[in-house]
Length: 486
Image 1 (spheres, rainbow, N blue to C red):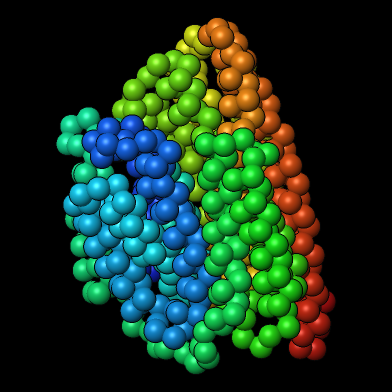
Image 2 (image 1 turned 180 degrees about the horizontal axis):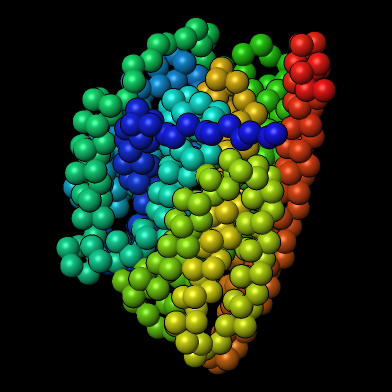
């Protein structure tokens, strides 16, 4: 007789920690896109060009990329809770200063400060909640905290558009203040106390190599939206960044306490899950850039209406990540990721046939379905990565997974931006403009298909690990149990 063990629920203690983490993550993820709809207003009100104003977005992304690698060391040195509280303060103060900025130069500087706090919030939040939940409850708690990660970039333009129309651009930053204050109070009261660890000296040489490397990659990819992919302003920082990251990886394998532990990738489960996270990031975030442009440039919708039209994909994703935790517990992360990738491929096909007059209701149905695929594939991959780790490895692994997902998303966004722009430059009619988006979604379909391949690898590695675990358990059974079983 096979008796299935009943998995424990999350419990009030885990939910308290998860709610605090979700509050903080909402601030960080919203600010990745909420400013995008205000660039024209910022250019007009601050009397500067769009090329200068785009640094309000780029500066934030660069500071995120620079600070994330230090998160693991800093969490050991100062404690996760203390560092989490400090990051909330830095982000909230940076938000207030952004709202008060008298000029574009000050606004860019304050956005960099805001990014220094925001960059640590997500990896720190994941560290805290993963350690609190433990492996048995990991899938379900990852479902809970994945909702703001997926919904933030989708609802950001909607909130930004509403604030822009009714309150002015400064409230795009002021809106973080009540959330930040609530998150700080909740974190003080609800997060468990933790102890500092012997982190050793900071790997300054490693930081000096990887920080400019990640900044170079992020900057090069961010410039794709302004210049062509083959231009010096894109290729020079991009290639330099890739070279520095390669040097950092080689060096990290030969020092005792590297800033980021590359030895984690010797674990096949972690490597497969990381590759899946990277590819799905490219497919997911790359596609997110197309639909806002479709609604605004081809259909003539304003920022608020565009944000509302993007909502259905977020609804589908939220439903999927809620269900994914239970599915992962039952069928495993690898198999659920394969299913999610298959759904993503199938539901991308309708977007290849978008026209200049396609009914919005049909588009919304397709976006809900695609959101389901995105949610079912992305969260299980991240869960699989954490399940293969010991508690001591979580501090090193979390910033690496965040960097991998962000770089994957940046690459996907850069590729699709170039493809779309090249075709829109030659589109003189509504039909030609629709064809430009259709062609771009053919590339989304291809990227999604490529992203599905690592999910198969993840499933095979997970299945092999389960077989090895079952064999080891059977070998360790006492003789009495074997006789009783006969």
